[in-house]
Length: 291
Ligand code: SF4
Image (cartoon, rainbow, N blue to C red; front, side, top):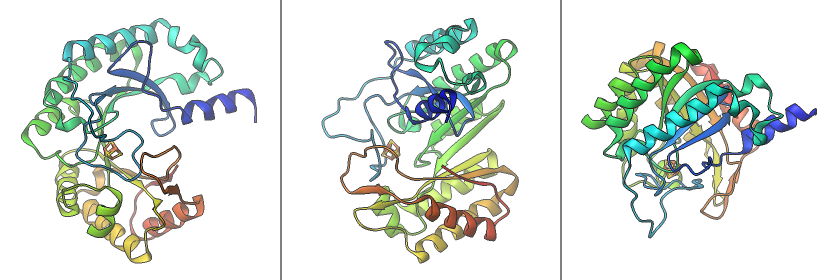
């Protein structure tokens, strides 16, 4: 492995949300996005509607809510894009050996330490992101706007208001679907909501917007998804897909790679994921990638 490959793998593994003294905006060299993803974290307080078994950052008792400062979000985003445009980011010490093509901007992405759509400032942040996309695209080239979500509140009027702005240009939703059955949903996502609601939200979403489904497959305290669980999961995918096949961008399967807050949550071997991929592609004409 040469120095560039080593640097790229190190950058892909680094999911720190720290950048200089920023609170809201951070860069990630992202394997899934295929280059630089500029993250916006609206939940530095770890506020989330799920409490996933595999979460590294999620809901923590006693965390004080941090109100979103929309002007500060915009300021940090503009400052980072100015650094990127000047070429300073590409020269930055932390990424100096990462190949240049992996440092090209691919998206600005609402992601972070919790669920963005439950933040009341979500619609206004989306509006400003779209404004910035329009302003910077002629100078930086095309990049997408993305939302990474657990889909728990995506149907809410405020979420829909934000999404109509965020996704009016070149945008996508990357949404979590980790379960085929309510039983596994409760085990892995540990939410007071029900899987049926998530499936309903995903089905409504794909009718309107390009959707990528992200699925975590892991061992939760000695239990792994059963054959029947995987079958039901694929049936759920088929139902979402049939609502609007053209809008199902891809399915991303991944496993645990970092320390989780809950003890006893372990990765599954690549072969397990590849086996699930084979079952999905045998059932549906969709693109599936394993990470
Ligand atoms: S949805 Fe994301 S942030 Fe929320 S608990 Fe799950 S992994 Fe953590």
